Figure 1 (spheres, helix red, strand yellow):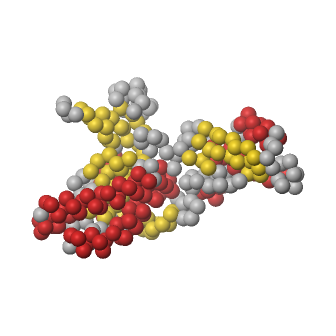
Figure 2 (figure 1 turned 45 degrees about the horizontal axis):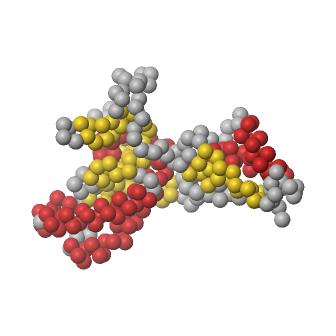
Figure 3 (figure 1 turned 90 degrees about the vertical axis):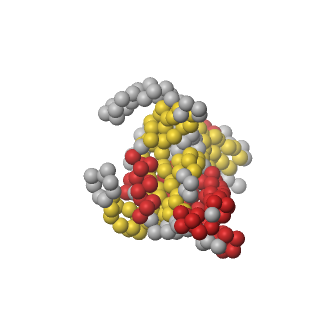
Length: 304
């Protein structure tokens, strides 16, 4: 359920109503190449079968990376990452989902062609930025939709994508810089945009990529605060007998990964101390140890 927002941010326009919320999200949009011609040649039944198969594998990949499918656009899908649950690594998850969609479709192309006589290809675009999530009441039904420039930009980027590829905006690349491999895909002037837009083609997500890893590579700022939290971890280590699990819970982006990193760095100096314990660097999608959707797990074990 959306949490109501009573006021707008300074300089962001009028206050939102109780059914609306401003949020930072990532948009993934797909388009099935040549669909109109396929419908004309084969009819509505074959078109429905094609869309059903492509949408099924697309939706599976989106859900696997914690995205939400908001709209089916006839021959495409609009998916959002970061709603209804905030994700601190939403842009990276969207990149993984987009590449997986293309991989799944490539693996199913021969089968679909044998059944329907068509080799499907998708164009996929990725953008990220602020939107207003709100309920739209048509009089008979109410649905939650996203309103914002990044949704329109995703639609325009998609048109310029080479079939079978994934493209992203400059803003999207800034969010995943250092975690993905890209190449230039052109500079375009879109209607309604005063400045030209640079497009980047997504090639791959780097091994063990995470937002925190990218921050470490760029260089971390001085660590200030979290004295109480570090003291709690030290206390847990001090009274360790064999194995102990510490759960760390907090909103996305609050600093769980950095806390674990700093704790590990400080304990490294005591490597020779048999009572110091050990931090297991088990990784999930976005951080040191098992940091996932607002929770982290730290496993401490005493030296043998």
